[in-house]
Image 1 (cartoon, rainbow, N blue to C red):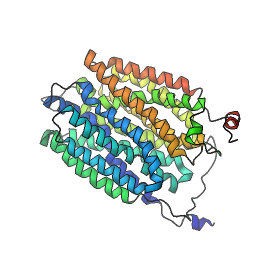
Image 2: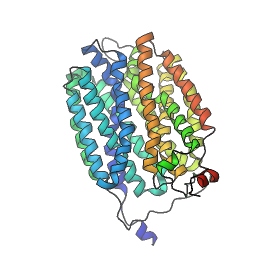
Image 3: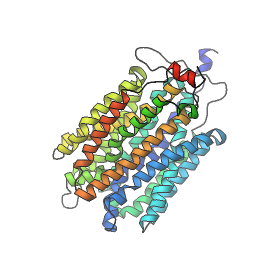
Image 4: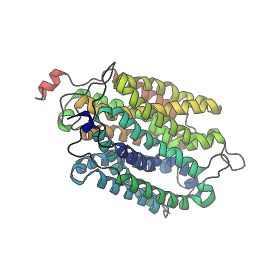
Length: 424
């Protein structure tokens, strides 16, 4: 097939639709902006109870991503995305009527989590089909925009500079309803652009060179992949590596408010910018490191950011009295976190073949889901127990060190392993 035929189809809509969709559902990362308003109205709710909504969201995303992976071939990416967007926006709307923790967990936790689980896959699934020659870039862009959503919603809801924020103006309940309407529009429009390429579509060949990752010529099924000991090393490394990010995301707004207390009831500039700065770091990490890993190698990229996380986690607590240094450490922590989410997505295809990469990454994503349980729970428990986040950040540094040690043993399947599986 000629080059003209290969590029005769426009592909931008796949990325544009995924970006619009992910901006909406990625805003769940801004949950910490609602923690203090909820505890103000319901003082009997602890920090652990309110921040654990983030754990529910992450677990639902990790588990239902796999369910979506089994259904997406049958129902199509667009329909899966439409269902996910409807659940996400409905969950936010119904959460605005919550008067008890069970109701909040059922709506903002479970129903929003269903939306995340079904919504996370379609932008990646469609993007990889339209841009198979740039998997790292696609995953970096799609997941990077996912992180950027919280950078928009955080200031919109919590305020910034002269803007008081929707919560201060109309309360958290009305804010939920406004956001639900915005989420509905963004996800419905974005989903309409998430269609598979036609049968005769052939993508341009990617450029190879330097330390660019090599994609396995052998396609391992999920059952074959999970028989490899090396896979479980990677899985555990992913879980420990993401701990710092999930803990920080769930606690950053309360931690910033504690470190830089409000003046006359108005949040300080540093506290107001905490969520946008974290969002920026995560988005840049997901996008830039996705591109970098296409050229420098996946494992080298992840190892580098784990070193950053190892030092940034304790330093953000030590520098909590300096706004500038606080921002630097916050950006670096989230950069490291975002990088892992982007690079591991592409790594599943590189190590175990592209054919079943969506299903295989779903198993890897469960490791992130475990970090999503541990991070918010540890952060909330540490604060409730000690009224400080010091030991939570020290635990994050220890987790990064464990992940870095495990990744020194990570490698793609060897020929001997493939022969044992009967696929070499």
